[in-house]
Length: 350
Image 1 (cartoon, rainbow, N blue to C red):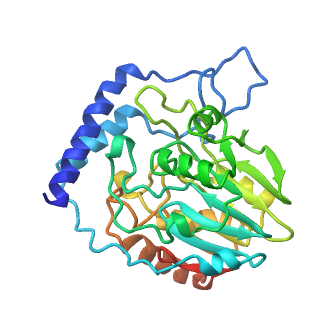
Image 2 (cartoon, one colour):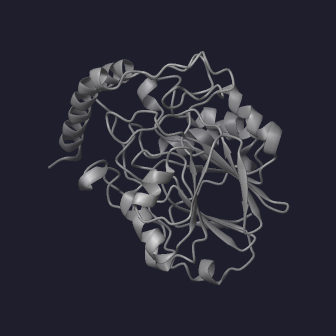
């Protein structure tokens, strides 16, 4: 079976499900009776900060139908991972490191605390063993991880919240999970015993680090009937003095510059750079490489580590395009020395 034919069937299946969902998932409305409600809270669920945000099921379905009949460019070969047996990471007690495991999964070591972001070790990003296939193995085997103290979850989409990985982390490592509002019950149902739910701008201190849930422009939902019922977020990790920013999954909006003004500068900012082609010049839910660099500047980052590319059969653009466009834009703007494009399994000190 060819990749193209399998991918076409997957897209058509998604189109059908979204068409069925148009009736099943009405939009929630803001409650005019409660002036104390945060602006991103709805009577039922959440919304983005940007009033011009437009990512309706109708628009998404139309886009999927259009792309189902369009000829895609060949994606080429995915990256080749850097072998990492985890020995140096397990031995490390104090040196700050960042390791790209793949997609939005990073292992961050800061002040003796080992942190995982949006962990997924599964072969597919979807329910019941279906969904986009993993094309590059995890950069470090699950069994080779150091003790994991903290897990940060940005939102509940399958490529960022993986049930099997969460269950294994809870069983083996017993970490504290920091999650956006509404995700706590899902985590505890999958074995997590230490879960902290936070709204945007709320913070908690754990093992000497401060974890702040910060805004993102995205959405949530694991079925056709739970769209945007759980919050989505980015995350700031504040150490002494180093700071780390994890953008999760986000589209670009100038409103995110508040993160840099309130909490920056960040020594390392992990920014997504893949999944932008479906909407041409500006995808509501994903930043392009050029927008990712702009977001990096907005949050006052010092080193950009790109993620959310080159791991799953998930996005449309050729595998090499996101990092090449990012580096070209960084060079044009005199920021090339502030970008570290990693391969899966590669670690850097910061």
